[in-house]
Image 1 (cartoon, rainbow, N blue to C red):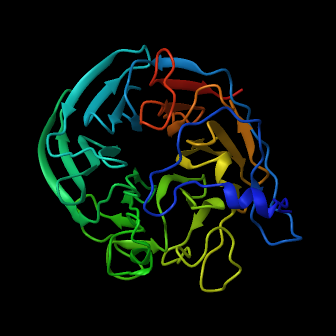
Image 2: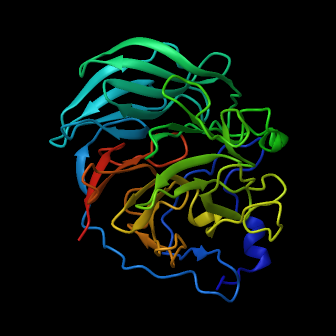
Length: 367
């Protein structure tokens, strides 16, 4: 059952208000618990939850690692948002620059963001001169080859550029976009802003998309994380404004309410989130599924949220892990065997307080 939060507290909490950047520097906060957003009076479901082990450094001295995608063999590609560098990082800590994306124009919350890998192809989401784009590259294991722009014309802004890329279990590519602070765009199905997009690896609308376009779901403010559970259900993490951050269970064609609703709205036109947090506790970014739980990196909240899932996809009580220990957490990706995570900090993004060794990629095994 949802905990009651005082009106005074809610009025002071800001995750990312219109026309302003995402939350500022984080001070370590006492652990707090998120809220399953199920129907009042009904259980959210339970699941046996794994426990994360002690994080270990994989790589240090990075600058805003935004996304992580594993390659065959265990190395990973890591994007740096503000430098526009694509790095290859090995489990032993070796870091090699694969490319610097010349077309990327890092600015504000934009830059080199999402990365996904399929066969000998790499997909990147980046902010260009006039727009945000999804681009496919040939990849020989050492360097990027020929580029093909798959999606262009995604609105760009100083804030809310979306940026997450992920290959779904259906073999299609999913991309998240923000509404760039122009809130009505989220409800405009003819705009690519404030949406989750679903496309083929050649850039066409994926078969079965609800509107015959790239748009898979809409009414989003700024989706930052995507993950699928073992049953193939898609979840997304999303920044709120002043009151509630969210995790949503995504349905094809679903309208997630922004800007009409923040958090739970109990309006049949909009899909309610399955989890909400006060915005001071989260600013949820990268997300992964592993060992029966969703794992969500929190920027302002400076912690890793664990959300146990029941067999029906409902959320149990979220648990805060590593609160304040590593600062702002942005990238979260499950290891190829599904038994652990790689996590990237974001303390050099202008809103955090860098520590010795930042930014870093951490490895967490489940115990």
